[in-house]
Length: 115
Ligand code: 5GP
Ligand code: ZN
Image (cartoon, rainbow, N blue to C red; front, side, top):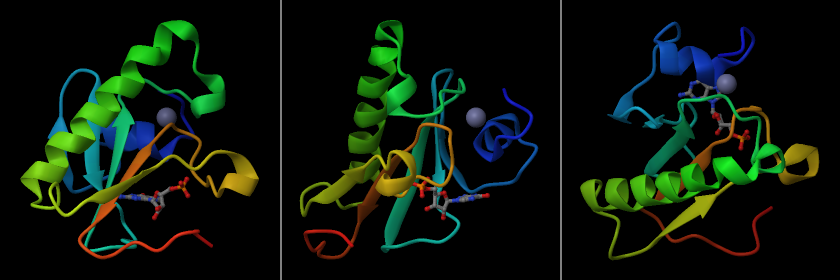
């Protein structure tokens, strides 16, 4: 855990969140400012700043994030209609929280390209 990281504080319970999944490796919770009817953030319990900071040994966690997202899409009833998985990276990528997170967005039609 890093002292400044809000997502580490959500993992530890120091900041409340609507948690929808938790295991040793992965936590998922509702985005505080949802951009779609379903908007979950799926994160590793261990602090990794973003995809640019993934070591080779960290790569399995990315698969676990995606697997959790697919399971949660089923639970939320948006699996078959489709959904969007998004990892914003760095300032130009729109990343505002520097703890790796996968956005799961669904429940409405998504346009492309994003803004
Ligand atoms: P990013 O812009 O880094 O890709 O995504 C960060 C996301 O975290 C944003 O969608 C934002 O609404 C969400 N967020 C920021 N602070 C909090 C918080 O304290 N709790 C929750 N649940 N979501 C947060
Ligand atoms: Zn963190």
